[in-house]
Image (cartoon, rainbow, N blue to C red; front, side, top):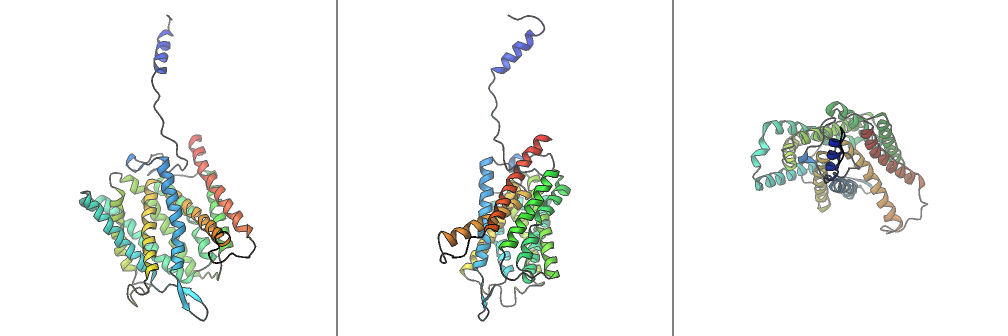
Length: 364
């Protein structure tokens, strides 16, 4: 039996070696951030790696499908020129979306005995402000689409990476390392190059349209970061109640803004609606709910990354539809290499950014 000053240490070490190891939680490649710097995501809003990837993949797919449904809702407005547009007022789908989200959320809350939790002042005050922010973003988007088209609008949208990073730094204290800033710039520029290559038709860029589009990007990024921060901070408030609290204010704000700069009520609220337009409204519901669940359980930057990857899903589907399935007849045009190279760069940059998050965390 060992004696001396090290005897107790050896016995203690031998005892500890026989204790079963506590299994570690699987690491997350997405590495979502908490409500503030160096603050983990609360247990109530935390999900495992499998659910993280499932939610992220669902968000990417729905974001890819959404513009396709909107494009299908266009009709020929001028038979002579073949110009297409929306026969319905696009703002009506946003108002219907708010009504559906609030109604379903209230029904779920009432069924679970949580209806009075909707009216807690501290929470509803914060999320009402955020709902108004989202409504202003929707209104600015309608104004910008009316005067801005083509590559200019799509390129301006890619600035969301930088604005989101800035808002996360000042509102959450979540800072990006120099490497992450470089990769965010690469993502923004590669997505812009892809959209510039892929955009067809007229590319007009009047100053008012560009201003509305830029303001829309800033407001949308602000709303996403506010949701990211406070949906986690109010950890005891279920997400469906938070959606109701935002949806009520978003509905009234959208209703009020519909009288400014738009013509929703000129021909009647449901003028131009058909089955496809109803599908657009459903798509808006899925888009809004999936976005808010993603920022509540992951974060605002991963939302932007998901939207960038949705571009690639659309590109892949277009290639398959034209060259494999031949839905509209197989195209005889030569395969375009520049869009493919841009898509590959986006994927590699996204992977590098996600990997950099792990490296920076370990470095700290």
